[in-house]
Image (cartoon, rainbow, N blue to C red):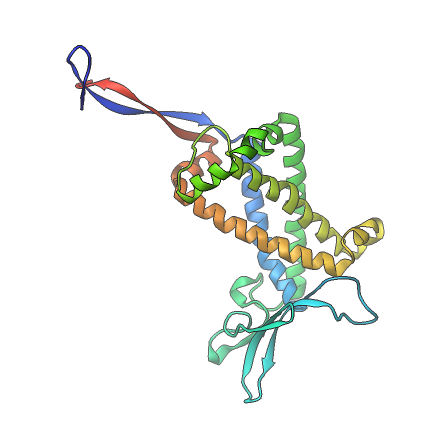
Length: 286
């Protein structure tokens, strides 16, 4: 409690301001992307299980000899079956997670375990149907978001970093490490840079590499194969971008909880975001 100039006791109360932070298009596309990416990930791992090896470069003859990642089940000299992941020539025992998973009496011998795929059992055809449906949904939502963001200025105002945002990146990074968040009307520089990477680099790459793996699209747009140095290289890039998006998603969820999940979720559902202002003086008894 403090004393005012006239001697009247006074207290401090925080002013809270509710602002409109996210527009309707931003909110709708956010949740549609979340839905689509969830099923794209799980059905994509189902498809990967059908041929659990990734390559770089063009095909040589009738076989590939340029694998960069493979996940398999291998029988050892003592007769046991172990899960082995080979990355850039280095072998890792991943039994119980990749290659071989499940309890001893119900072992599953495939790259990714059942709980990470849609459907849970091995079914390439169903996996492809689910993947293609949500892939087209994802692409259409991205097109809607891009056009709307260009028209309403959302992309220019709130996504692309300004010179001031770039200069403030070191401080913004330190603030995030200390869990000191700037709950303002717009994103800070680190957030903008992250969204630029996801929305303007990762999402287009996912769409274009996905199209490159389609024989029909290769016939219509043969330049896709040239851009990505072959269909198998496009598949590898597709997989790597998926891993980057999973990493972004994990950090994104963590930051939502660190910054206040109720307020963050409310802003992405209703568009309304609560920010705390400077303390204001309030006389006691009011």
